[in-house]
Amino acid sequence: MDLKNFDISNGETGVELTILDLDNKPTDIKIKVLSFHGKKGREVFMNAVKENKGAEQSTLEVMVGLTVGWSGISENGKELKFSHNEAKRIYETYPLIANQVERFAENARNFLKK
Image 1 (cartoon, helix red, strand yellow):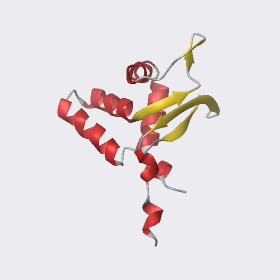
Image 2 (image 1 turned 90 degrees about the vertical axis):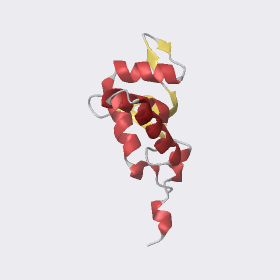
Image 3 (image 1 turned 30 degrees about the vertical axis):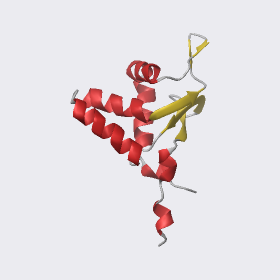
């Protein structure tokens, strides 16, 4: 088997995740995330562990650190611009979105070169 089948380097620049609604249908929300398994992902994880804020807070910090952009996110009719502070607030306020981001970032298959 060719080692290129294990190339998850897309995770270093980010891959776009389409957020699903409660009926598992795609929404307009797209969140660009880095791979948990990549170099940057490991750095983000190690920084969160060093800060030792507890498991839940560390997981949140890792997800925020792996988030590098988005589109299609609005709240009360106002489009939200990307920032890490805003990502943290969204993930704390909307756990259904946070859960999808966490699962996506953990799955190396999402970052394979095609």
